[in-house]
Image: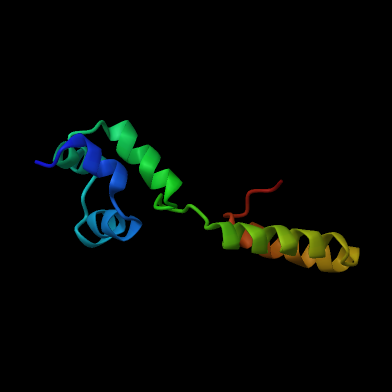
Length: 93
């Protein structure tokens, strides 16, 4: 096992490899590095390695899109709402 201090130095690509390529859980990684699962989970969040988590660039693109939607005519906004409902499983806002 590796000493505690090495986990704070783990590169993003190595952590990504453990999670996605090797399928390691937070608990397994925590045991390997002798840290708590909360420490692993926090590191994953900081490195944008959570399932479904957006990168800063993706978030910026979505914010820009939302700003553009504000200036569309009402019928265009209705079309966008229909598309959103299709992807959300028809759950109305």
